[in-house]
Length: 297
Ligand SMILES: *[C@@H]1O[C@H](CO)[C@@H](O)[C@H](O)[C@H]1NC(C)=O
Ligand SMILES: *[C@@H]1O[C@H](CO)[C@@H](O)[C@H](O)[C@H]1NC(C)=O
Ligand SMILES: *[C@@H]1O[C@H](CO)[C@@H](O)[C@H](O)[C@H]1NC(C)=O
Ligand SMILES: *[C@@H]1O[C@H](CO)[C@@H](O)[C@H](O)[C@H]1NC(C)=O
Ligand SMILES: *[C@@H]1O[C@H](CO)[C@@H](O)[C@H](O)[C@H]1NC(C)=O
Image (cartoon, rainbow, N blue to C red; front, side, top):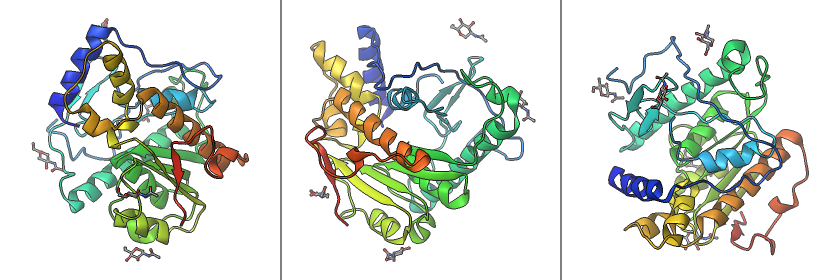
């Protein structure tokens, strides 16, 4: 999203003393920020958190009993603050072309794999996560993300078996994964105006994927509704303010409702593919979730 827009949001939210909604699940949630340096690679984005855009959805998954790792990609993510207060601001986005987007996805995939390696081998690193006492078994993890992050999840699954199932929240796929698909469970969740009919990468990825698949669209939502800004916007509106252009990015759905939907469906998907639980909510339209439209392929 545009920096100016984010600043408008930030200044409004600060003036409101904003807090995110309570998580949907029963588990208590603790958070921490950890810096991980992968010395085996040079950062292609560097000339040398923090507030994540997805804190609310990550928290909802954690509240359902998962260890959730949110990965920021330095100099590529808009703004990062490390635990020691150093900052990294995005320098050069390479996502403007298909080749650039595919290259960026490859770097992000390598970042995700480095995080799994560190969680599996470095107890000092892993123990910094609240409730974790040593290294973690990362042989079967879920991966998900929004926009380019959703594309990254699919490419990560194609590159590394440890990513056992995935979710793409409204992101176009880039690179070879469009043609190879994935052979493990994958869930596509989109805004109201994005699906296989107007995104070939979705049509082809789904066509080429052989694992369990599901595609749903959320009525009333636009691309930005999957970010924290949607819940921020609820509060801004409730306080009698507005942010010009917000509706064109978020849609008409209330942010708090969107958050519930994403938390419920993402949680159900991971419960199903990581733990083998039957999840009725994934089986078709329901009165409880009328905004969720199932794509019949
Ligand atoms: C980013 O910009 C730096 C110079 O500021 C350049 O050296 C580097 O190659 C660029 N990275 C990419 C991936 O374009
Ligand atoms: C980071 O900044 C915060 C707020 O200004 C301060 O309380 C904290 O001591 C700083 N941490 C370090 C490691 O400098
Ligand atoms: C393990 O993690 C700690 C804490 O994050 C870090 O300081 C250390 O460099 C890591 N060790 C290796 C071998 O990466
Ligand atoms: C697989 O992907 C290619 C593009 O890489 C596309 O041309 C083809 O139609 C896809 N196959 C299916 C069955 O969708
Ligand atoms: C798919 O997207 C198109 C274009 O935005 C939209 O008109 C259509 O209603 C969507 N279909 C479904 C089933 O969501």
